[in-house]
Each structure stands twice: as C-alpha cells, then as structure tokens.
Image (cartoon, rainbow, N blue to C red; front, side, top):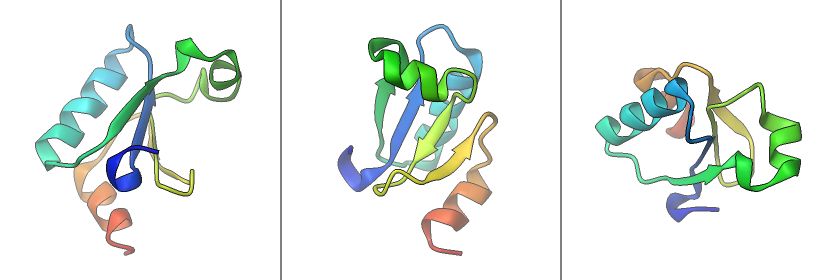
Length: 78
C-alpha cells in the first residue's frame, strides 16, 4: 500500500477519478494511486466502481463521488 496506507484506484480517462484526486489533494491527504488499467484483475474487480479509496487493510473508504468530510471521519475512526 501507499504511504499512510491510503490508495486511490482509478484510471486515466475518468472524470470522477480526477475529481476524487482533487478532493484528496485539497484535504492534504497523502495517498498513492493505482491505474486499474495496468492490471486485468483490478479491472475485473473494480472496473465499474472507480474511483475507489482503500485503507491499509484494503477496505473501501469511499467510491464514486468523494466527500471530504465523510472521508476525514472514516479515517479518524468515526
């Protein structure tokens, strides 16, 4: 997993993925990104679900449209 364990799954040509990245950057959150198109297994699992934000354990924190407040609460354990 990425630094801090938070990973954004998406693809290059995805407007929701670009919006999700902007939300995470505005939050000042450190995250890594994985382009699902580089791995057929990721495409099969997440192709219709992106963008997806995963925690260090691989649990889904958010998907589709990201909400900064909800993400912050989930990351804080609330």
